[in-house]
Image 1 (spheres, rainbow, N blue to C red):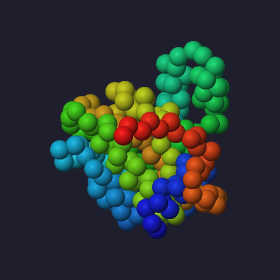
Image 2 (image 1 turned 120 degrees about the vertical axis):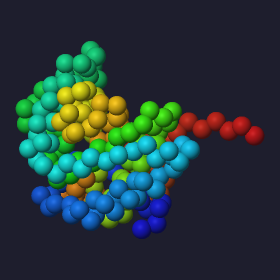
Image 3 (image 1 turned 90 degrees about the horizontal axis):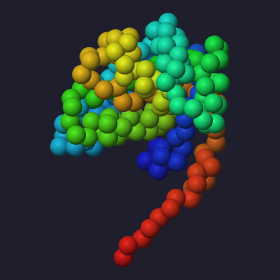
Length: 192
């Protein structure tokens, strides 16, 4: 798959089949992630791979509760609060795999480096016919002592990118080039 096909065809997936993702494929995705650009070649990342559905369910429950408790007030957050308060809502959408990319060192650009690794991982997954979604609802909980403990993440590490991975139930057609997926026209300021 050409890189532009991957960029324009990738989308967030929230419905997965029950098929597992084998270890060889997961390792290939992580290999793509570690080839991301990073500041001063620090490579400050580590990967936690969670395939245990009971662990994912427990983290989902705790993360939802944490978000509802710590979320600001306002119309946007009221919508999120309703979703997160639903006992049937699974924060990881019952995906077979969660890969959490964490920063292992307190370097200046640790978040940026881990984010670039996450993008490589998601594009590589798309090229392999897999679906992914960055689960922002879990980030705040995973950055607490309880969240880190749930995944065995050392206290000094920073969980940056919780990415679910699996086989998508439906594969949408690839939109034509341009502004796919309802993207807004970007504001561009030209100098020179």
